[in-house]
Each structure stands twice: as structure tokens, then as C-alpha cells.
Length: 344
Image 1 (cartoon, rainbow, N blue to C red):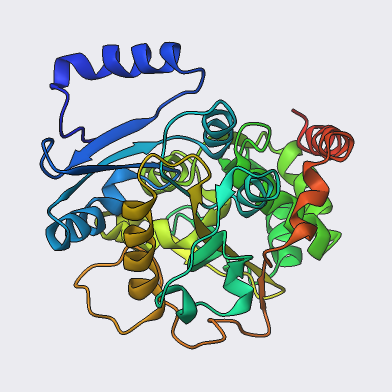
Image 2 (cartoon, rainbow, N blue to C red):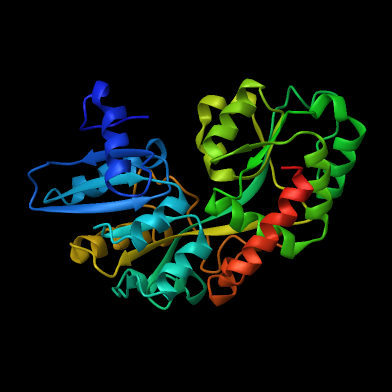
């Protein structure tokens, strides 16, 4: 991880101090631009610095009067920070349901500009949430671990493969800890809504001692090193971006269905600098939806006004339907069933 402002020996202390001071856990932080700039834009995000830093730098280069304080936290910690009143301007997250809840509960403010007009209705929630990527949720495998085996094309294929080769895959399967990861919980609930095969697959994975992780990046790295053979329900964009690991990973979009999520941005209700936040949203939207003018954009651009959707790709839609599994009783029931299936 890179931290541009705090000297290396002080990073661990600073992050621990920040976590204790604010009742939420910071994973990483980066300052981009002149610390003495006229304005500071504070962004709270679930996107890794390594993936997003060049894009932040491009924004600051175009707007040198603005410096960015970019803070990375898990989606669950993002919720804690916003609900606790931390003074951020923008929230960027892959957890569409949690973003929708923040907006529904009054923590965000509307924004409109010529750039937001580029976003179709399905990528714009009441002018409060704006989609800036549409990404596949995939299976990432180690080619070496699958040597001599047919690559599964559906969840039924994967279930059969795991049952037929238990010794090869025991203790070498990874997925999100959905009790801790907001994005992981979203993907699991959407998976379960799409097909009953999700629960059968979960039981098979549970019988094989599946390992649980906080985030996609860690799973991808462990697949690449061979520590695990496969990672289920991870973001394909992160795997694609790791060109340094290309020889050790392979991305599989299962053909029974592949979930697609929207990464969204929102300006917080009490943003100290909403004007700079609006400029950044415009920058995001033009990169995602407009002509490809930037040399670097960390996510898949929208190739057509209707998005990159095919018969086997199932997009998660923004809207109140995402709030169903955030109900306390439903969440507890889902997590209980998941733990039973996964032998947690």
C-alpha cells in the first residue's frame, strides 16, 4: 500500500490512531495534490488506492486548485463513518445496497449537471447515486490448480467438479466473508435470488473448508500464488487490472448467469465542499459514459448507452429492492443460512 503524505514509519501508528479517534477502521489513505490548495476534497471509498491513484492524479492535474484526501475503508466501515457524521464530501462504493440505504436514509444530497445527463435512468438513483462502472462478479481460478480438468462453465459444472475432486480443492477455495464485507453480502444475496444452485454450491464449498476473505484483492493474490485454487464471487475488474499476475490467474464468467454490479458515487448531505465533489462526479461520469478522453480509467467504460449486458449477464438494479436484505431480520436469517451452508 502507498501512503503519499505520512512517512512510512508512522503509517501504522497513524492508521491505528485514526481508527481509535473515529469509530471506523481506515484501510489506507492518500493525499493527492498541493496540501495548500484552495480547496480540499475528502473522498471515502471502497476502491483500492493502487487501482484509483492515476485517475485521482488526472483530476488534480485538471483542477490544481483542489487537493484530494482519499480514504479507503470497507463498505461496512464506510457506513459507520457516514452515519457517524465524519466530514467527507463524496462516497464511492461497490456495495449498491448500502449506498442506496445511505441515500434513502437522507445522508446524501442531489446533484445535477450536464455530465449527469449522460447517465441513463438505470444508472441514476434520484440524482443522488450515479453509476460510474458496471462490473462482472466472477470466478477467478489458478490455471495450474485446474490442470487436466475442464474449466467449469456453469455453477452445476463447478459443483460436479468440486465433488469429483475433493482432495484437490479442500482448503483451497476462497470467497468473501459476507458477515464483514458489504459487497460480498450484496453479491451473495443477489446470487441466491438468481438461482437455488447458489445454496447447493455453498454447501459443497462449506464441506471443503472454504476460506473467507475481506476483499477481492487479497483473494486474487492468493490465487496467483497458488495458495488457493479459486475465488468465487470476486470483481473481474480487479483481476483484469492485475496484469502483473496474468500468468497465475484466469477469469471465468459462468454462463448460467454472471452478476453485474454498479459502482456508484454520492455527495454526502453535509459535505464540507460540495462544489468540488460535483466537479469530481462530472469527471467520473465523463470518463465512464462519455468519449474515452483519458489515458487511464480503472473500470470498464460503458460501451453503449444501455450498458454491457448480454443474455447471461444479470445486472443488479439500483432501487428500493436492494433494501430488502438490509432489513435486520432478513439479514440475520440470511447470514444464519449462509453460515450453516458454509459450515462457518
